[in-house]
Length: 305
Image (cartoon, rainbow, N blue to C red; front, side):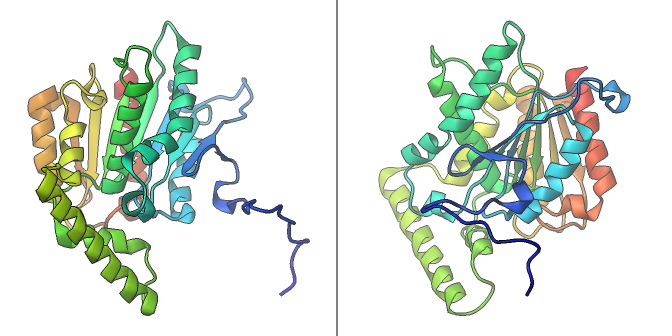
């Protein structure tokens, strides 16, 4: 097959650039930062106040071509906003300790702290968009890492608006297995061996939890997202749950139960439920894109007044 140009020569250990994230700088193992270069004279739609930063916590094993479906609309709606993309994969759960995972978030914490320092004495405007339980897990870790890195260990991750897409669920061994296996080959020996390894990991994890009394990871993230003293419930922060009755990985009833718990903590007027009814897991934007992005835009307008 003829190429449009010569293939790039890579130095030892160098990675090919991701064509779907070409505008993003890779600042860490799973951390990517987009900094817009927008002329000051640009006119934004309705002169909406732009987020200073959009933090995207993608679902586990999300391919960049699917992540791209969210990047482009965000760059169009908020052309002045920087975007911090945090990805996660099965190796984060299988092989890396929590300490290693938190260390991998240092570039993200550093970027956010730099923004906070630039905006003082005002607070930065930050939109956090979480996908699935994998994204919720990453977001909770980011909040903890930011708190621990603050000078007095008392400064919460700045969040102005929160979107929870297809999350969180209640604990389920079967659904956990299905979710982790999403990143495996669809068929063949790799699928069989990988599936067996996932079952082994889940069984071992459950055994360890029972022996040492460790909290189930899904229960933990549900609790931390609704912690009355945590980053996700601070001030007048509003949140929106986007979910579907047809989601086979994250049941609608699990999401709705979490929203009710949030309402009792922060007030019903700060919690918004948006049921897309028939869309699949993290596929709501493909089911009804116009509705999806109108909801995102309206939540942001309400959050920044």
